Image (cartoon, rainbow, N blue to C red; front, top):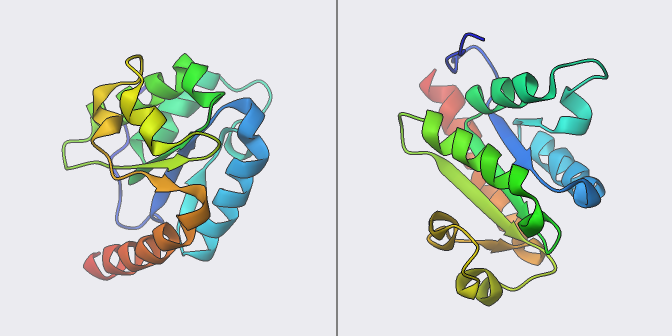
Length: 149
């Protein structure tokens, strides 16, 4: 599969990583991302029956500008979110923006659990109850990104 570069003619995109248990919450986040002027990549919406799941995930990651991971007690047990994050961080030649959204677990729990990768502990995590601040910032980034193109 050939990698696609992010094109300025395409819409700013946020890749949403989540556990299947958290699909409804991820869908709500995707709606707010759309309201902020960006497109989201969400497996439920962007992968059709019969698609190669891994290929579609890689394609979504390679064209996304940001990576949002929904950190819940269930997601922390799902190795695939760490795989997706690794693909995103490994592919980006520029400074990659990762947004960790904490829901049902505390920031302290994330910081103190040894099995959680160190890089996520360095990210300024946002509690789901404060997620509106992310959407405000995202709207500003989308506007700046579209003006730069």
